[in-house]
Length: 502
Image 1 (spheres, rainbow, N blue to C red):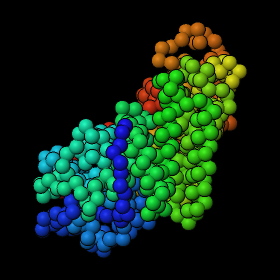
Image 2 (spheres, helix red, strand yellow; image 1 turned 120 degrees about the vertical axis):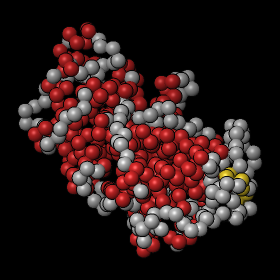
Image 3 (spheres, rainbow, N blue to C red; image 1 turned 90 degrees about the vertical axis):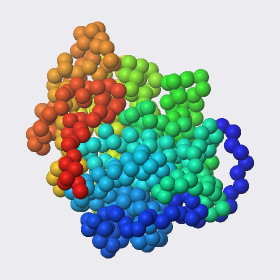
């Protein structure tokens, strides 16, 4: 992509919409404050919580030291999404505000056709912690991501010249692209929001591969520009997160287009350099809340190399034993870091952290089920007992966080279902097909190709936790075959009582 020459001038982050004179929210306000759901003092406390506990975990939306009242005037939707993300300790109220956020999305984006930074940044925050809304997660989050992508394009933040709209703010009028003398795509807020959308799409594409944004020269420019400017310490973390996704995309080229792919040596060297850079960042920011970055550091080999596990028949031709061990060790470390995270941090980890955790569990389960004979002497020793111990520890951590019938209670049940299925699959190998989409009869006749029963003294999910299995085993089988994630019955859309929401 050819980019026109860029002249960049120093520009502080702002919280306003994109017009040089942002339109105020019409008075009187009609929001969660005026309706008595929260008061100003409670709102200020939640905004402080976001700045302190959540914002460092998601460096793509920065809220400077601005008052609650001012943010409420200038970015009402962003504030609504911030407050919603910070209410995990009050799930009933959080559910009401989530419904309000969807109402605003329907009204402002769809009905009023508005496009501005308030909407975009609000969407990014909403999506980043959307796992709290687990009952409707799969029916909503991917649609919201595509809306965010559309706003990025409409505002010209991606620097593609094929299509762009005027920014339309909530007064219904078009606004100038210039923002305090600078075009929006050159502002730190504009670049962070663009990269935030790119990153969330990249992470979501692990399980929903249709959701991708091309890694362009402009992505590189924005990440480098923010990293060099380092207006906030997290701008360096942002750059590192983007580089992880770039390596993952480059690694996938090896399967799609081997001629254009980088060599394995070059790929592993790039991974080592990036890991060293992130470790250096973690040392520099030892006093900061860096658990999401720490988790992504340990996830690098699994995220970058793990896609080859989707190609089960030739995975052991693609990678040597040592490389598969690297993936397995990374997947194990992902869950270990999660278990080590403080109780004050774990509930605030963003969606992409939990995406990595689930991916790590699936990778370990798949490596465990790959038969020794299929590896032709390159067996990777991933023990069922270890996976059960990790899973049960994760379930205990989820249970400690849960207030019952919430996202953590659901996660605990889902992990328990997976462990139960994994156990029964190894005891009853005839019920499991993990060698490909089409069963191989020759493999089935070879007892060495089948999962082996687990030892009697290993922990069993059904004995260690009262887990109700209400999911078809074919769901887990399909997810491990393709390393994908399917909306399970407990996560399906539920009926919303509109009267209750208002």
